[in-house]
Amino acid sequence: MRILIAGGGPAGLTLAACLKKQGIDCIIVEKAEKGRTGGYSIGLHINGWNVAERLGLIDEFKAKAMPLGPALHRDRRGRKLFSYDYRTLAEASGGRMLAIMRDRFQDVVTRHVEADVDIRYETTVSGIHDDGAGVDVTFSDGGIDRFDLVVGADGYRSALRAEVFGPHEDFLRPLGYRASAWRMPIEYPLGASFVGMMDVDHQGGLYDIGDGHAATLFCWRDGRTERLDADARRRVLVDEFGKWPEPVRSALEAPIDWENAFFDTVSQIEVPQWSKGRVVLLGDSAWCLTFLAGQGTSTAMAGAYILAQELAQKPHAEAFGAYEARLRPLVTKMQAVSRKIGGHYIPQSRLGMRLQAWILPIMLSRPFARLSSRLFSAPPLDLG
Ligand SMILES: Cc1cc2nc3c(=O)[nH]c(=O)nc-3n(C[C@H](O)[C@H](O)[C@H](O)COP(=O)(O)OP(=O)(O)OC[C@H]3O[C@@H](n4cnc5c(N)ncnc54)[C@H](O)[C@@H]3O)c2cc1C
Image 1 (cartoon, rainbow, N blue to C red):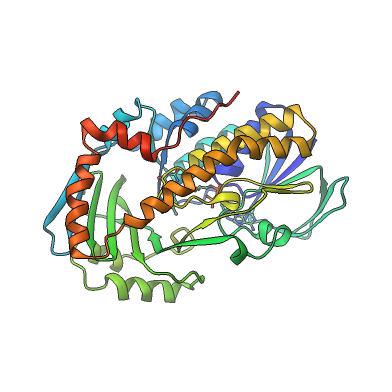
Image 2: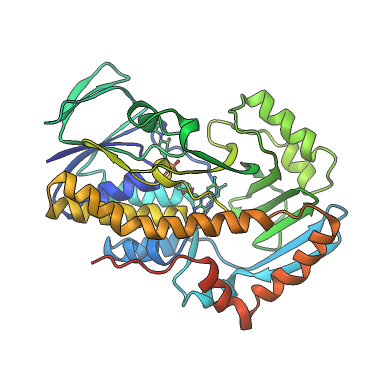
């Protein structure tokens, strides 16, 4: 069996590693150039952790993980609202949680697979035809090839999904926010794992990623879902946050490399069935949870593991069905959790801000962190 994976992000790379473990041949086409840097911190939780252990990658992830510490949240005038500590959350998950920058995560998995898997960078799928017995694919570099199966792991705005399943808008469930994340140089350490600032309908923050750099995460209530060019993105950010004090001011004045930064609507993807013929979707292209759940990477990794396992045991149609049956309940639950968090993530009034500043530190304190973790985290999946 020979499989094409479109997209070399967390889902596509983990699938390549899992297929390699099962002795199944695959190639990856990835739109970005090799060694792309940038990106944001991703939290690896129980399901990602369990897959990483099975692939023998957990020690490398741990070695490249970021130190966990306190998070401080202030209001727009710099007055303290609340704080909590990521180490308490890690304890509540039995120590099976870590935070790692996305490019370091990808570097670990890429090095694990690249001797066995052909990864074609700066390449996309430009044409696809499933004739029932196989899939003919044309690539953006003009190449043509035939595969037994094709996996769309090309993210939230999946081009493969649009080609085979229907237009992007048909699968979109907007949660009413936009978000942006980029990297910037800093002169002084931030002194906390996360330094956030909040106002009605707005939140912005920075975290230290070492080497004299910080990463940002900005989020604000905004129901629009269209894609913006670099100039329009900056204009929106300045409109929303332009009058905020440090550290937000420096973040907005920093040069932003939009090739590697993130700016998009916060929307879920809901696809009624993740496979069609010989094509199957995986990760954000199938079920984007949004960053609000903090479980997108771990769920993509679990999906990759289960898909590879089923393909090693069953004909593709049965394997696709079993993959969806095993994963769909978790995805449905985590999408509901993400929507629930989304409802309260950024308060819509001063009273809401005061309530959040009172409730959140209690929920994330040692006596309650385990209960909160049970309510909002993904339960461990049976990986067989
Ligand atoms: C700001 C932010 C913070 C987040 N924080 C967390 C967190 O703490 N924990 C967590 O678990 N998750 C987090 N997430 C979510 C997580 O990043 C995603 O769920 C996860 O990356 C999904 O992986 P994926 O491979 O399915 O998609 P993606 O990460 O989107 O990767 C898709 C890949 O496909 C490539 N691609 C795109 N189009 C094409 C094409 N046409 N052809 C070929 N390749 C293509 C892209 O370049 C990319 O490499 C966060 C997301 C954001 C935006």
